[in-house]
Image 1: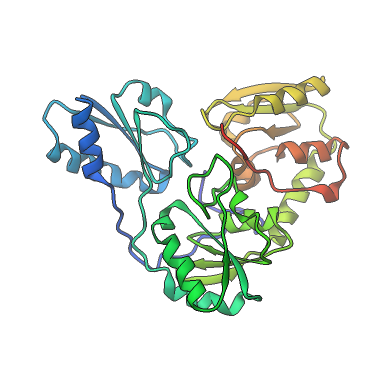
Image 2 (image 1 turned 60 degrees about the horizontal axis):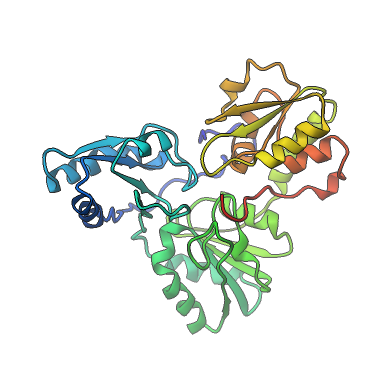
Length: 344
């Protein structure tokens, strides 16, 4: 998903200059141990988009630690989450290492390296206390800061807060963890939720799914505190729905990536709409859809395709629920954030 922004309501227009250098724990010893235990000769390495540049250096370090007959292969496929595995490379390797995300699918072949951050979260958490309105607070974070989660809970309790946490559904690995498509860990009674992590996409999605909560963003990477404000984003989504209300021909996107397919939703749309056409693809991009003569699209794959890149598509790109609104099955004020729950 591109990082350049084209509109105020576009979630990609939330980047801030990096204030802290980060070093990651690549868990090389764990990887080498797995290679030796399995007598692996072909090892696949998959990095998320922002860390692909680190891939060659990690491969070099592993070469120094392993026998000369071990071949390391870097995945060039786009990767935006633990659900986004390079299955082609995985099938052709003895060990497959997925960096940057926590486990979502258990497999003897896959090693997940979440890349825990070394950035101290407590100074920015101190600043965030001014925006917490009550004495009960929910705490959530991403996989990169899970190594400090218990310490963060203790830190808040030492300052007089009752901290509420829970583990979400089976798509989540840790208590208090949120994904870009899943905020089940925020299903807690507290009116205030403190999100500790980089960027704004996760807390904006959380605020969309829980509009009654005050979502405070404590970003230890960019050293900034903000309040999740969904108004600009909602305007952009309402505009897309309005543009699609006159659509006759619909392209229904089914993403073939292993953790992103929702065929039952796609089939339901096709069953109810004679002017809907199923389009299967692994990477959903504006360029790939431009040659299809459709009036609008509905994406049944990763919600972030719609919310992050929605403004870049040449025709309206809707979530399944936004589609139901556009065709008149649900009222406009029912619009909700699209999320993935449960296992894949």
